[in-house]
Length: 106
Image (tube, rainbow, N blue to C red; front, side):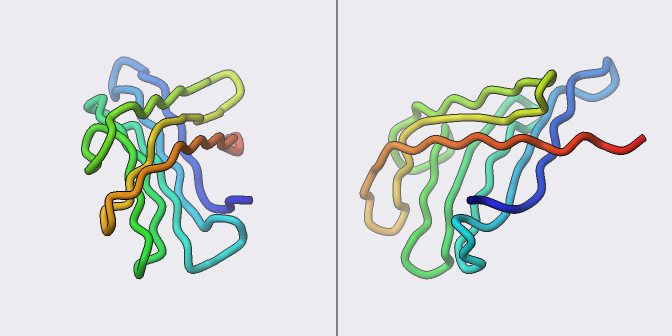
């Protein structure tokens, strides 16, 4: 299970749509996961243990560019899937993720 922080913002006419999630992966504080959909429409995802694994997915990654990120504002969910490529050795593997953000108090 991944634990961390998640933000999902729908275009309100002032700022464009954006989303980001980051945290630890599978209860291991040494492995970090992040995914983002930036205000300029670019997006990406990565898994990093800062030693032997540095997996990227998305248009700015070193491998296959097939990452799809979906934002569901009703359920506050960020999900995606695509090919992750290890920047250190070029190995590729399919991956998917889904995060539900907590509603903001207000």
